[in-house]
Image (cartoon, rainbow, N blue to C red; front, side):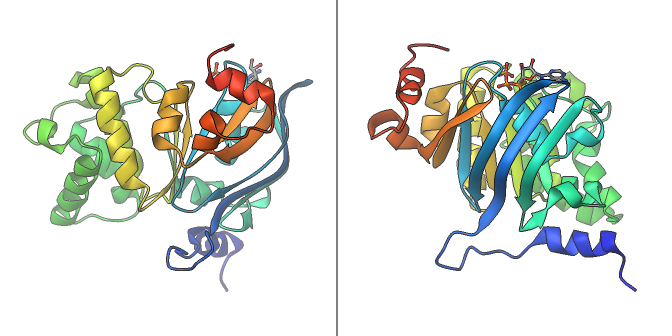
Length: 273
Ligand SMILES: Nc1ncnc2c1ncn2[C@@H]1O[C@H](COP(=O)(O)OP(=O)(O)OP(=O)(O)O)[C@@H](O)[C@H]1O
């Protein structure tokens, strides 16, 4: 008999809808409310994220952006003070009722604001996840490591230091290493939380180019408080403010088209935040 957990693993993998005419919905969020104790960090959020788009989330501090990512990744399982209500469907499956949270996480790569290197070599940082999936063959692992480092625009800089500690790389290189590591999971959703906070402008641009390429393969949620970064990268963008999803729209419309809420235009034009 197939276990519930194994069934979930298969359902979470979904099917690639790139060939169909209508965009497939990767993530559907309904009436999402997140609270810590009595305080709500996010209230009644409704939105859909389409497969293969870069979906931006912008907003000032304390808007609830990071809490949104945590809820998608079911971090509430660890954070006992965090309460999540509403529905989050990933590839159609309601993540709130999953038995196998690890299967969900294996489909989602997360990149945090500051690079979080595992205390191991460059090679091992990227080979760990494939190894945990059962890939033992060295030649096969070599190919995966090279492919992930190349996709993260880091291969040329580290190909001669694969067995040095990841922590010895520069900050910008370490952030690209965390992207390579996230990619080694073969996620179909990549979530980045203010990835450029500790990265120089040149590296930021390199990573932005990487993300533009990656959208062909993965869906990307980009949380940023740099509105111009969302403008450069995101197909559609949501504006969060004080726990409210004020508006969701085609990114360029938020800057130059019709906005539904005046606060959106005020924020993107820098009048507050
Ligand atoms: N672990 C926690 N315990 C209690 N309150 C929290 C916790 N994490 C976040 N909050 C609160 O939830 C609200 C939203 O925080 P969140 O980090 O989601 O916002 P944000 O938009 O990502 O902000 P920033 O841009 O500063 O990272 C804030 O008021 C914050 O203080």
